[in-house]
Image 1 (cartoon, rainbow, N blue to C red):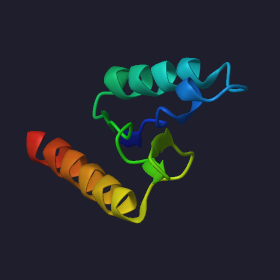
Image 2 (image 1 turned 135 degrees about the vertical axis):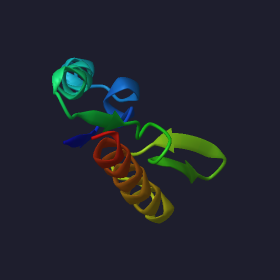
Image 3 (image 1 turned 180 degrees about the vertical axis):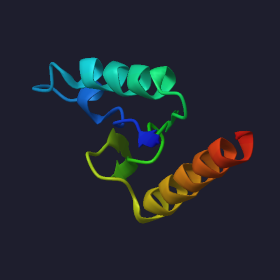
Length: 82
């Protein structure tokens, strides 16, 4: 099982009080699983509006590609570990 942890969107935007709690739970579930892993997504949602960088809810186009690669790499590592 590979979990893509929620991005940092909820940490930098108001109104998402439980965001960090969910992120921590995702990591714990992955670490506690016999064959579990998690991947970081904090850098996949960064976008620029004008001259300001924001942590958007959704990933960039390139971010989704990177996310898929990270999930695949983590899954392969779990399979090869067996």
